Structures are given as structure tokens and as C-alpha cells.
Image 1 (cartoon, rainbow over the protein chains, first blue to last red):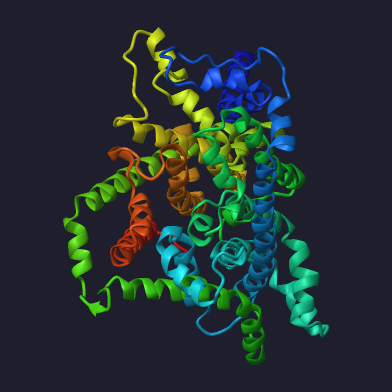
Image 2: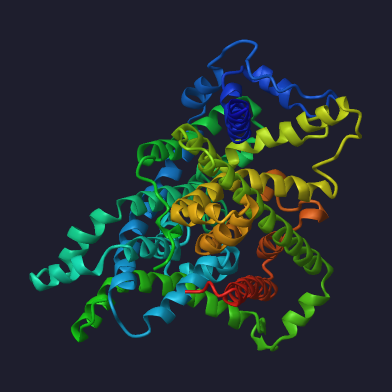
Length: 277
Length: 283
């Protein structure tokens, strides 16, 4: 009886996992189809039901060949995504860990009130500040510059809120002991705090990377030159016309966040969900 | 906590970079936004822009849809992911493969999946093929009230795994001794969930709720990628409204819509805060 129950539970678990994985597997499978096959599948006008075939009729690398050798514009857009995302992630990790240390462990006037402002900023959707930000960026002469997307991304409140939560679980006693030994605050930050919040840092890197990798609205508004658009915008364009390479592009676009995820997988933790002391 | 007069200055130095950036790119723009919402051109009009917005049918439609989405999708996602987390927690040991598969939807970029959604939800897509073979009428996901259902389904698919992982992390922090003593006292598993699990993971729930709100505003990216600037009237959200007014260069209208959107969010948040406080789980 117990065995039947366990089998049932595992079947359910596998089913749930498949629901989450299916679209990704499907996309991967389709990326090995020839453009003719993709076109037939995505032709929404012939009035027949679509078949979700997971196995290509003929295994083909045509889509990848097209993307890498025939259509350099997509590689260029991919590179734009890299230029936008990497500095943002790096900047955000540095800036937020510094601020999170102060919010989590140091004392200063108005600390909690200031932090409440951060929480509100965290929740305000992007659209609210999109236009006023345009005015500010215009005054700073940053429009049509990658920095227009990178800088606001760097100073997002999200990282501060996330890392503060990790830092709160570090014991005060270790910091006090270091202070008595005459360590400077900066030394405490680099030698005591940073090594202990590795999981939080990796989680932030991943979430921040995904967020900026998918950026759509800001480049559309801040960049006049469409040659600067990242692949996230390029992909929405392709889905209207260029069926032949869409799945290969999608797979290519998916790889960097996946790499980060699998690299940090064992360290990713969600420290903010521990019960508050 | 470390208390020292001198440390004020040092703390301030640590915060300075973040505070400077936040002020320039978030706080100042937001103040500009509030000021602009009370002007038309260069003349001060007070709240006239707001009054005009509430007479506009497009705006009311957008407000209604955003409200419906928030009220249905967020509690539903919370419920589903909580139940799934309990289910996962009932296994003694679980391979990291399953954990990964739950997080994959968050990792996969939105634009990559647009074609997959089209194949699944199209009039002649996978779901309709199944419905048809079971003898039901076809459902038009792209052009009827079911568009909202589709967007909610995509939202849940995308963020459910993430919330499940958050919940399981929270569940892992509940001391097992609590469950054991409850079992000794003869509590049913439903009672255990209601009296122990739910109160104990309230801080987690609050964080999940926060993330769900943040992500519910990002669902606009899917709507945009699937439908462009003008989706059908069932899924015309406030974000579409703001975006379209951006292209029309109607700044005053745009700013007041932005302010209303943020007030809307702050109200939702306050309600949750109050609810939490009433149940005495606040910090």
C-alpha cells in the first residue's frame, strides 16, 4: 500500500516537472528543424490543428547555420544584450552589497525610514518612472547611450533588500570581535560579511541577470538607433516574420542565464525566507 | 548592533553610492512625475488630469483589467505554489533535477517562448486540438475573454516554480519538533497545516507576495511580445495605457496614470500589511 502511494507521488512529481520543462524541450527540439518545417508548423492560416511533434522530420542545423554565418545582425544584438547586462549585474552586486551592509549591521539616523522608501521603490513598476527618467537622462546627456539602461539598472532597490536579509543572519558578535581587534569597517565588510553571504550574492546575480537580459521597455524608449537594441527586442521582431531562425535564436538567448543558474545552483539559497529573529 | 557615534559617518559612506543612484534615477524622476501630473503644458491645473482620466473609457478599461488580473492571478498563484510546496515537502529526499526543473521557467527568457505559446494557444493550437477531440467547442485564446485566462496561465507557469522554491525554503525552517508534538496530541494533517505551517511561514508568505506583485507587473512583457501595442480589450492593462500614451507624447496623462498605478500598488501593499498585523505576525 505504501509502495503504491509512493509510486503515485513520484508519477505526479514527474508530471509536474514535465509541465514546467515542456515548452523548453519543445523549443530545443524545434531548433533542429529545417526552416521549411518550422514554417509549415507556424503557418496559422491553413485551418488544420497543429501537431506538437517533438522529433524533427529531418535533423537539421540550418537554423544555427543561418544565425551564426548568414545573419550577423542577430549576433550583434546578442552582443548588445551582453554589453547591457554584464556591467549592470556587476554594478548592482557591488553597490547593493555595500548599502546592504550598512542597512543590516550599522546604526545611523533614519535607517528604518530610509529602508521603507527602498521597499516602496522596489515595488513601483518600471512604467511609472520610465518617462521622468527619460527627462533626467536627457539632462545628463545619456540618451542613445548604453549607460541609459545600465545606470538605472545598477541602482535598483532590489539588490539592497535581498542582501540586507542575508546579512541580518550574520552574528553581531563576530563583527564586534573584529572591531575590538582593530579591524576597519571596510575590512569587516570584505573579510567577514562577503564570504558569509555567497549564496545571497549568487542569487542576486542570477535574478538581476535574468531581469536585465529580458529588458524590453527601456531600450525601446531610450535608444533612437535600433542597431543598439538587445536580442530581447530582436526576438519579438523575428516572431513576426523570420520563422526560419526563431527557435535557434531562442535557444542561443537562453544559454547564458542557464549557465549562470547551473554554475551557482548548489549555492543558490533564498535567505530572505528564513523566519525573522 | 554596533553603536558608535563615529560609525554614523562610516555607515553613510557605505550607503552613499546606492543612495545617490536611487535619488537620481528613481526618487527625482518620481517627484517630477507627480509634479507633471498636475500640469497641462505649462499651466497648473491641480487634479484636473486625474478627473479627466477617470472619465476616459480606455483608462477605466485598463484599470479594470489590471484589477481583475491582480485579484485573480496573485491569490491563485500563492495557493497553487503553497500546495505544491507542501507536496514537495512530503518527500524525504528530492533530487536536484526537480528543483532545477521548477526554476527553469524563470530562467528562460520571455521572447524565446513566444512561438511556443502561439503553437499551444492558437485557434488551431494544441489546447484546442485536445478540446476538439474531447468534443468541446474551440476556445479563441487570442481574441476573447479567454485571453485573460491565457495570460494568467502563462503567469502561473512562469513564476509558480520560483514561489514553490521560496515556500519550500520557508517550510524547511519550521522546527520538526512542532509537528511531532502536534501529531502526538492527535492533530489531523489539515489542522497541522492550518495551525502550525501557515502561521509559521508568514514571513515567507509576505516575501512571496512581494515578489508576485513585482512579477505581476512584468507580465506586460509577455502581453507586449504576444500582442504588440494594442492587445484586445480583455487584456488591455495599465502598462499598455502608459506605453501608448508615451508614444502619443501625452505626458500629463501619462504621469497621472503612473501616479494612480503606484497608489494602487501601495494600497494593495498596505492592505496586506494590515492583514498581517491583525493576525499578530508582524515583526
